Length: 239
Length: 239
Image (tube, rainbow over the protein chains, first blue to last red):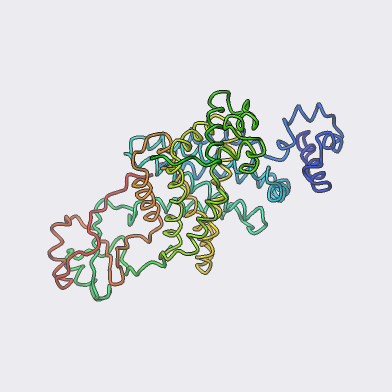
């Protein structure tokens, strides 16, 4: 069952066909309208320019994301943003083939690539401002933290989106869930467990193995078993 | 002591003066050349377009950063990148007033703002590719991590740069050092100290205070003092 394409979609389809056939620069708005069996005036009722046909309606997507953020009941700004950003991925997935043709086109036409980068910056700014407002009373490092969180969410989202556009990802929704989980973990307070109200973390330099130490430590701590984490820490594999 | 301005600098100076006077769109290349007491031909020996006069030579800066990265002897890709990005900040600081006038201009002319955003994306891509190559053998999550690191370095740098351009920062070099420290900490393996080869971290749930526990713990550990960290962990303030 395929629904009848809208006028907007017919114009977009004709445009992409022409760009493939003649190249982006060569195809005119007249050609696009003609290709869709429509008039130039109809084209301009739906799009402002040739570039506009190619890109999704980012104004609309930004408004939808803004609405989602405003009505969010998530615990942290970062979780709210990492949830809202999925609307973009879902929109692209819904576009399907059009999204992939756009990606191929923006990869080869610098002006289009530029416009895409500017769109990404608008999402990042929306997120940064949302997080910064949320954390307004969190001290002087909050603006930098808001900046870093917004950048992380957007770049993780785009990483997954690009993989899907290139045909490298079969399950982008699962991938974006995992990517956002990693972003949230990045900003989580270090070494906190599910309930850290009564947790004490002590780090000692010692040559003894953890296994040798545990019984004696447990005794000192009144028979408590390690409840949150116990591990040898080796130098990280680095960054 | 002020050195004699170069031809490039004279043209830039004249351009900014004219943009202030007449607005960016209204000032022509002829006007700029005339304002600097030079010919149109001389203008085109130094710049390709009116936009070019405004922006720093990003191609040159990108090459310098690439050189710095290639000759880096830092331990991790993230540290190398967080070091190299400072070249951009230092360049802007060196420009001084010109950088601040450009910032005012790009804030009001969308086409210039767009070009600036595209430049930022080029730095981020250079960093992402450098980090991704460095971590090529680090498993399937490495590309996302490279993406996140590059985004963090660039956004932290731009946060400090923007503060300085707005006159909100008196010591941008110290601020960028602190911002990069925060970025590096973000990606550090949790709870690792300066030398963690022989460190054991144990987390217990306990109602006893750290102060009460320490002497007994030290005894168990053969008289070692806490060498890396010792702190009560309370639920984080969240994100």
